[in-house]
Length: 129
Image (cartoon, rainbow, N blue to C red; front, side, top):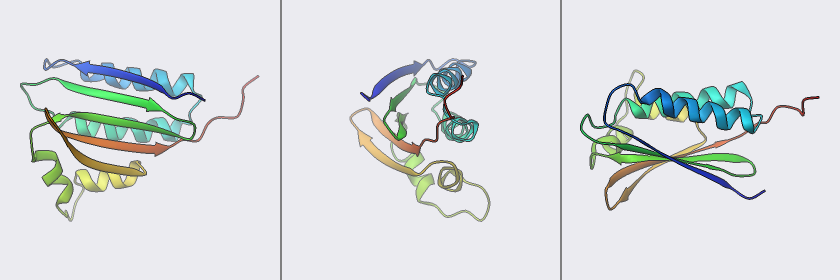
């Protein structure tokens, strides 16, 4: 299987976050991903979308691989999200959410700011008739 790559840039206006969730749901349906995988990816995506800067676009890059879905989201303000990932919370913080719903995550620095890379191993539904 050749990896598919989808890039979506969400404008800084309110109301466009649902478009990213819709694209994710479409990818999940096309690939016959289980509901649990789609829900976990949607939770990770929604949690990170809440942290985008109020005055900037956010790009979501999805790459579908043989046994996983990888995503990169950014740019975030330099240091903000990566600092939050480094903090230990007693409650539910960004780190705890991502540890719960994805298999791997990391903060990376690109020219335009901080990005978060995620990877989720995927289970697929059995072939439907």
